[in-house]
Image (cartoon, rainbow, N blue to C red; front, side, top):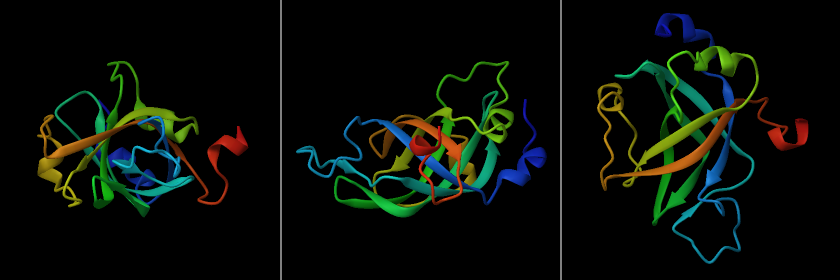
Amino acid sequence: MPETSLSKDIVGRTIELLIGEPWDFHDPASPDTGVRGSYPFYATLVEVINADSDQPAFLIKTAKPFHANGAAIQYLCAVNRYSPEDQDIIADFRAGGPVSMNFVYRQDGAGFSTDEVSSIRWSPEYGGLVGGMVASDGKTPFSTTR
């Protein structure tokens, strides 16, 4: 299990969120305006927390809010999408490749407390995005550098 104390070097890093679902997240012309964000989607990794699983959770603050059902959202909790026990997601992130993530946000736009992260369960008060995250310089979108 990764140790939080060993992951302090990634806290404060600029990241790019690569959103795959909803599939039209970055399309301002989409008729589905329930969840809408802009591209590129930069954020800061605020905190790493070992949740109640084999993988850490990441608290993230987006550089610009995205919108979900009328609320401006800037805070996300990211958890490993597949969570294999032998994967070290922090090492994979440090290596520079995108890591598959589920991103959870509060429907009311509020942030997350550290205690809340380890007890999040699917409920109507939370929404979600699916995709990945990758370390970024905050200037060059991932899709143009790979």
